[in-house]
Length: 318
Image (tube, rainbow, N blue to C red):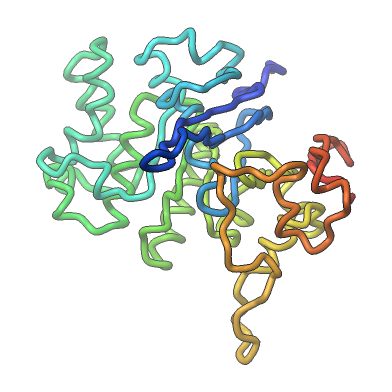
């Protein structure tokens, strides 16, 4: 069995130029700043953090949809930048948040699912037909539903179509960007169970982005926490939820609503003002909102270190 990680991200950064307004200088927005990690085959990496922390930009760079400012993505040991568009599509595929907007409303479901095969230009029509029919059945859709258009399906069925389209080329990695957030709770469970079943049966590797911590705890084997473009903590899922080390991770977990009546909304001490990625604080980026900040947190960037074999942490405190 190969020891090469199926996915390796090395010092990945992405910066955008942002116009500050009339007569204002152009600002540099660091969406992702020096992210490195590896992911073994069959694992599920959950990525969590507030809106604007860089999760989706990171996912777009892993997919090859966004060119990094620096750093490199390796898939099965090969630099992503060295692969052409068709080769990348055979290795890594996305499932997006909104299944309706990501599907062509004028195409039939069969045409949508089979499009990646036709785009490769190397598959015979009978092979395209066979694979499409098999995958329709695999994700719980009928051949009759394959003749419909997206508007004739429910939200959950449309997400099954998006999953089938992602898997038609038999990729090794699937990037799931909030794949269930637009669905009803009962349908979310069905889609999550389907994704887990497909991962086990097809030996897939997932990068799973979500705001829903309960979903991440359920599906992920390890979790990365991002804040203002940085990875502030990463650990095995059970260890991170049981013993969060970074103050931001602790605040995120404390923000989960409880079903117990009378407790109201949790106060996690993060304040009401969202951080501005175009005006990064000095030192630790979390220190303006951290209730435990030390003097050096305001001036010194914390080193990224390994407190245990599996944990990675960027913090002066622990």
